[in-house]
Image 1: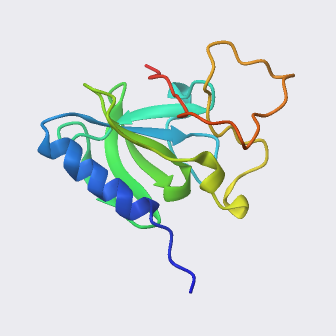
Image 2 (image 1 turned 120 degrees about the horizontal axis):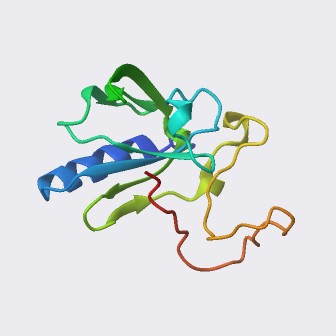
Length: 145
């Protein structure tokens, strides 16, 4: 039996947990993935970090297939759509506790060509080979402001 993807369910649970702990939920997004609708002028190194606290957004809906909301960026209202497979993580801004997802779990048909999944180095070398799938340890992302 093939189960439906769990990323949407996990995002809703982590979001609620962060709010229950009076923290600010930050959504890490692969901004270059296909169908992502975010303000590209705020994208850095292929990622964008979005504050999705109730005080920062309107009409937030965490679907099984994506996350949508309205927010202002530089005073300009925007509608945001993040397909669930483009979510890299959801963490509390105050403590960095939450959940990061393995970018390798993303369905291959969901990615646009040349998509950057994650940046986990201070000085990435574009000529270096991709990390081995046997590499152990937790992936790391930086808050981009």
